[in-house]
Length: 274
Image (cartoon, rainbow, N blue to C red):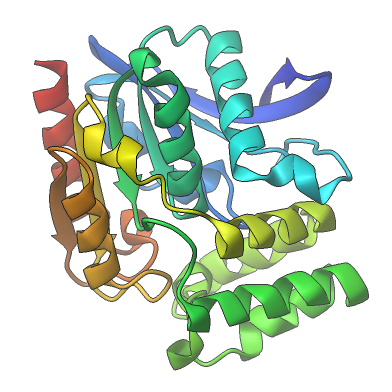
């Protein structure tokens, strides 16, 4: 595991060196990790340097024991510090799910640092009510009964109930076993803080309407965190944003239909480079 140090804590990341395109930083979502991009990182790195980081309290990155430290603005500032430590300079940023909400805040304060922005399976603001209820149950279980209880909340939830089924991918036992181990290794405070961020996210409004860098919004056609209609709205309210739907995928299309997702994202990044 490769690490750097940010704010005095170890941060795990994976890196691939590639072509001359702008460096790309990948930011995962709620209870996720850098491995959420394993199926596409080599393809992305054919054109550029690619770095996937574990956010604080996730994967191999240590995190604080204060839920407020996992807020969107705080995490956005952390992402910029990570980019500095990694020496990314002016870079492309891709945020998935909760990472997409974080990426919007990075762009809102520091768009001059970004070559372009990819918002993957994320929304204008907070989760819809059904998905928020699921995330709340998982966070409360983690806080009050531990991470094993949080895993049971993920496992017992029917697909129609809101939003985390695609992250578990029960048709892939190896992936499910990995997600299980990963969740049990989380800082429970990060689960609580991430849930608060997802449930309380406020739309950025005027900033999105005036953004001055290329933006791609990409959604899995069966996403049940934010619906395709909600993600289409994100593209509609973001100045000049492109919009793409990945067929045969839900909330994690970079794992569920990586070939299609990769072509969409690589083509957009190439246009942004040009």
